[in-house]
Image (cartoon, rainbow over all chains, first blue to last red; front, side, top):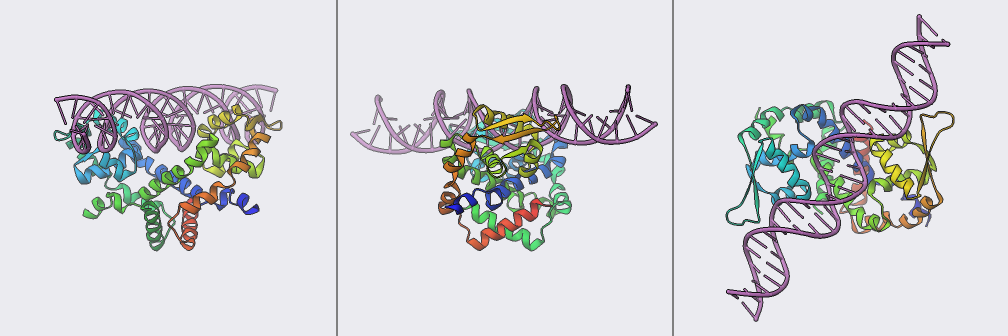
Length: 143
Length: 143
DNA sequence: ACACAAAATATTGCGCGCAATATAATATGA
DNA sequence: TCATATTATATTGCGCGCAATATTTTGTGT
């Protein structure tokens, strides 16, 4: 009985540090992304597009764990900026295909130093700890 | 050089699974919080208030890693619902003191089973892994 | 072929999350 | 004491993040 109330304390929760860490990390990206006019979410969308060239909205959502309510307006903004195009698939008109443009690919060059800069000044974890954290997070995600 | 582009892949990043995990966890809370009319952020504000009774907005922000831009409108909503009161401190009128009401304290009873329900059906981690994850997240946070 | 279900995306609405700015009260220094 | 700086909170604006709903297209069964 008393233990149930004990678990309601912030310090006894796993979710809270996860929530706080995630925001802290996104915040760490902003100094590098903002000069490029990008948000963190847009940045991870580009990561997928730099790799795949073309993706359906649904595939993109599955990869990033985001839904159309988040992606559609985001992709429209990127389209307006000329970074991507959005076209209905010809085989199945329900599907919207997102493709990266030349301008979108040029962003990759400007972003290539960001991961290095962050890991240089950012993490207090040893390499071994970082690997374990990575493993635990993906174990959790793939549940 | 090639390695810099390699690091721009989603699978080589620590930030992305953190970001995705955090949202997944918050999502896991919603089935239990929504019937109570609470969001996850409101829930962690209550965790602090159940423990402390009175807090300044600044203290609350420090504990939760949130700023006034997030907290002020959130607290105003809770005040309108009758869960908290907001009063300027008499010693220092710049400070706003947030206090939990009787109605706010009654929520604790309704929330007391939530952590147990989540850990029961939620996590794929062993107890040892959860502890290690907890340690790594706090090590990261306190940097 | 036609009704109906399912699938994929879009839209709407609301609450964060945070940078930038504003406002008001207190502290500081000449 | 009086300008100035600092501190604490509030406000504004914008982009998520997601539930709920709508829209359009495709699949299915008869």
